[in-house]
Image (tube, rainbow, N blue to C red):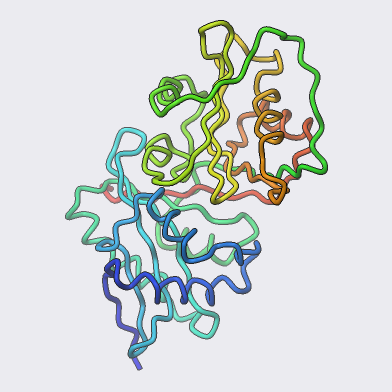
Length: 291
């Protein structure tokens, strides 16, 4: 039977999540933690538009899908492949390409000029397929786990810093202070979309906020870790991480620090110093729709 491609609605989410669970059962990383609730809220964070997301169907069975987010990102209207999965029995049939070709005209209608995705570096087959489709690698990201049991407290030479909770506006003040633009999943707009609990820490020197850390408990992700240039190399980032680790509930033994640009040698060195474990690298790829 020929595969049929259809745009989704929110009502399709339960079936789509079941398809994702089957599709990611043999993934390079353990995705068993991605419950339906977590996937739904991750989609909210990623700006997923179900009318731009596609399911691949064999009769009434959904055998693959692509969740697609839309947003203004890095100064242009972009789409993001928030998740693509194909169940094992249907791989090798160009279904991912079929879904992409089904999505592309609608994205053009919506004025999208760039389509972004992230793919794990060891997934060479997927990288080859995306490259053949026209995607190009633009950045490489490192992903880490920070375990409570192996966390190493870093000495600080600054005794003037104190930690306070801040609001969205306090975090947004750092949007133009980053050395590199965050990935789609860790974007400032994505943080604003999160509807449930989000921990925002500010490191203050007097009344000046010297750094911010944003942590999403549901996914156990550190989404933002930024220190102003005038306060770097004084232990501010490690103090924020320590404050976070000390405040975690007992059952949380690991936090994820994903998508650190490989060009950011200082942050990579910090994570190694505090005992974070490098888990995997992934590529950010883009397809220029306007070209």
